[in-house]
Length: 280
Ligand SMILES: NC(=O)c1ccc[n+]([C@@H]2O[C@H](COP(=O)([O-])OP(=O)(O)OC[C@H]3O[C@@H](n4cnc5c(N)ncnc54)[C@H](OP(=O)(O)O)[C@@H]3O)[C@@H](O)[C@H]2O)c1
Image (tube, rainbow, N blue to C red; front, top):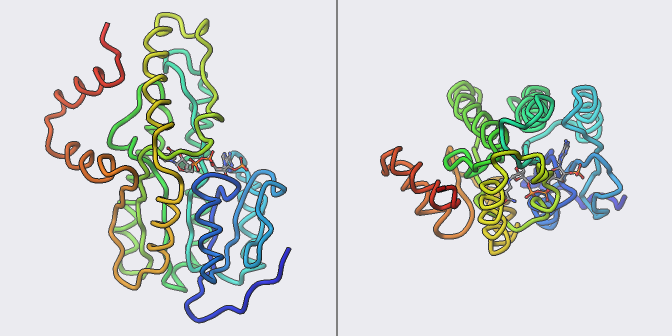
């Protein structure tokens, strides 16, 4: 590992989960490029970059033991943290009726219980440093994706936890942001395990239609730099942070959240069924 650049008073110590690819990798490289020190995680640290200011950490959010030892090792090396970015995550695509309980539990472990455990372990540091927590949820919390029920539900749970933490931590100097990316072109979709058509039963056609729309959106989406830049802005901001930030195309970041608030629920659900071509 290359040595750290000389830390300045504005340089932050950041624990960033899921730094091996996509949004996390982009954010990690930007942050170290600006003089911050990043402890970035992957289940396989060989996948992590080797650059000055970046400290690879092995972390599997599926395992509470791995989380405990990863955070302990990172804290020992960093001293204390100023910022936590809960970014790591993965999804699963398939009809809820045919999804194993184990898969549903795994989504909640990786997207909710794991990040919550990391957050709790780091809270003493963050209270001391009057730090920041950036929880990466998803626009799927406002627009759940069909056949990604457990993913959308787990992201909504993380988003709600960010909201309650904003209220609970208000007096302790820790700021919490719910960062909601829309469609972002990373390798996320290629890694997405999908229920095979022959196992999808009555949902076979509808699952395929929904995936075609979802996949097409991802292919024409903006790159991870849009979210990486937003993470840098949130880390460096001297002003009170906004409670929620939506990042993505102009429509997804600006218009979609407004529609979610203004359009009647029945109409929104009808529109989404048409959008994903789920109409029989
Ligand atoms: N791409 C999008 O359109 C989009 C939209 C909304 C929200 N998001 C969210 O943004 C975050 C980053 O996604 P991305 O698009 O950058 O995807 P990505 O390129 O697949 O990156 C996912 C990162 O999470 C890590 N990860 C996955 N499962 C993990 C586990 N069980 N334990 C520890 N680390 C794990 C991966 O590391 P290793 O595999 O090396 O362990 C990787 O670094 C995720 O939370 C995702 O849900 C993405």
